[in-house]
Image 1 (cartoon, rainbow, N blue to C red):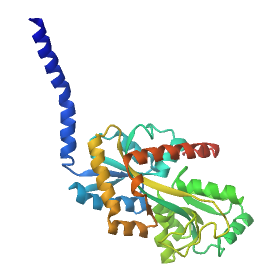
Image 2 (spheres, rainbow, N blue to C red):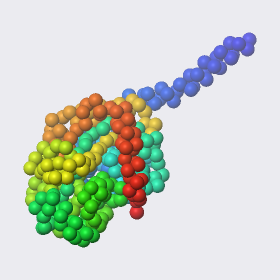
Image 3 (cartoon, one colour):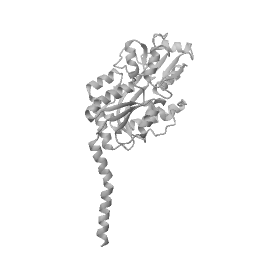
Length: 330
């Protein structure tokens, strides 16, 4: 008499345990049913913000829901990334992370979250070299002249950065180590305000991401000395590479990707990845991103798995370098 009752109990228990799984699958299948928030951990008007808005506008078509940009600035992007880490893992919050926020901040700051385990990778998006740019009145006609001026005036120049440990800061430190120059740093809350001060002549240099600086270079408001990469960029083909300018192999590029909070359902991640890939393949989107000086990751590197592996390798590569430079957030 006891055996049938036990079987019925086990059957009911198994069915009850399966309910949350079925519920999660159903939610993933119907997702999304309301607007999605994209946290951009940098100010409005900068390159990261422009990238998020361009992609969000295109992804809206695939997802059938608007993507609302939320700019959460401060501490090199760590405040915005932290908000994303604490968000509900239901697919309605994602973040546009960049090299600085997703790699360097792990050394520069004591973070209340883990860059690898507290996030689900969605898709690698774009990569871009940095440009060595200066105020229009800088007394140097080319990169060799700039280096000579900096050596003749140690400590007199100021370089804007997005904060300690950001790509702009690391690129500048790398430049100093290779050229034997010295200059001060002025931290800003993002690329846009730093470039506005450069445009106004209040600072002297920025080792700026191409997406942030190329429009001002083309407009003649600031001057560019070199691209910190092997190849020139399509958005500003007249700017020589560092190799061509006489400072070989001093390369620095930053990249961007999408992440969601850890434990976001795989089905939801797949839908977000599909929407991102479709956006990156759109000719209009590609043109707009190219105009910002960005290159799109190859299709085989746009999967969540590829982004996860790439992210881990970048941490393994850069953390020893950043620690050796004793970079610490303020």
